[in-house]
Each structure stands twice: as structure tokens, then as C-alpha cells.
Image: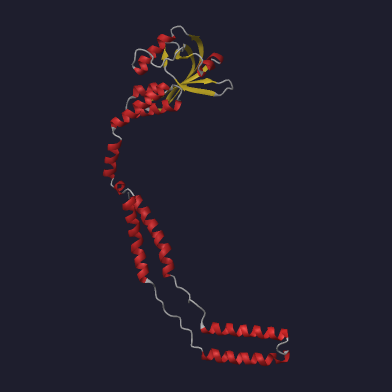
Length: 293
């Protein structure tokens, strides 16, 4: 709040400076003085004389005489002219005071009218925040997110967001499930990463997918894969595994996906089975592992 009022004060001071500095600055006289006007008239008459001589209206021999007459007339006019007196206009203190008081008052009034003054009260802001997003509301949002990502199992960003959300709620077991990812290789050699459910039979890491999916085609063409499992309490602490698919089989794949549904969804049968879908079980032998954290 202190930062807000400091910035508001600085902005008000800058606005006042733009208004008050021109008001207080000394202003030049509004027009030319009497002496300047007489001298300009003399210059004009001399220009007319030169033009008349050039046109033959006035003889060149009379030039000096006419100039002397102009000078005598100018001396008389300048001697008769009253001295220039610049009126003392003083400082427009009333306008300065009005601006100095009116601009901050106008700014503050507009803020009260169209701004959010309640934001200046931390207790009110906290209360408002608590009313709009309580614990139950957060849990409901996470539950909706969980449904969406399970309907779209290839949504890596969705699974990552679900993992962070469940970890923030202290549901670490669910978070750990969400943080398992499988990397396979595309035909051009680029990596393809998808979140997966994994299992371990004591020797192999087991992954279950559907026949014809991208990772299914990738693992049939190139058996080299990698897996990453993150610590839900610390995403920078993880277990990385590189290995090779040693067996691809449909035998036991249906029973295995139901087992994974029980582990991850707490249901007896996998609920997202598509018509004519063929489940496939992949057995991966770990070759190298690394950890961080």
C-alpha cells in the first residue's frame, strides 16, 4: 500500500509541475514598445524612399535631404514618446492555489468514483478473496481439471497443471501419479512426450496404451524410450530412466489397464475405453537411471 501511495504522490507532483511552472514563469510584454514602433515606422519610410528613387519618382540628388528630414522627424517622435513602462502583472497566485488544490482533489475523487478503494484495505481484500476462492472452490476446480485430462490423456500441459494443483492441496499421492511421463522418438528423431500410467513387475516398467496411437507406433519402430517421475513435494527432484522396450503384447493388456484404473482412478474398470480399441502392454527394461535432488 505504501508503494501505491508513493507512486500516486509522484504522479500528482508531475501533473502539478506541468500546470504550475508555466503559470509562475515570467511572461514577456504582450506587444512592441513605443520606441520599437517608431523605429519600425522609420525603417518603412526609408524603404519607400529607396523605392521611389529607384523608380525615378524622387531625384537621386534629393536623397540625402529627404533622409535628413526623416531622421529629424524620428528624433522628434522618439523624444516625445513616453518611456516604456512594463506593467507589473504579479504572479497569478489565485490560479496557482486553485490548481494545487483542485488537481489532487479531482484525481482522488475520480479514484473513489471509478477505482477500487477497497483494495487499499488488506483485510477487506483478504475477506473478498476468501469469499470468491475458498478451499472447496479450489478442490472443485481441481476435480474438474482431473476429469478433463483423463478424457484427454495426451494433454501434457493439463497433466502437469493437475500435478502442481494436487501437490499444492497436499494430495501427494495423486500428484505423483500425474507426474509420470514417457518420451518416445518420432520418425524424424524428435522427441514425443506424453503422460502415462506406469507399473513395475520387479524387472520391467510396464506401460499401457492403445494400438495405433503415436507412442505405440514410435515404440514399435524404435524401442528406445525415457521416463521421468517427479517428486510432488519438489518438482526439481526427479528420477529419470532410459531403457528399451523388450516386449509388446496384447496379452494381459485389458486386465492391466483395469488394474491401473483402480490405482489411479479408484474404479474397477477403465472407464475411457473406446469402441474397437485394442489395448497393448509394453515392457521396458531400464538401462540407465539418474536422479536429481
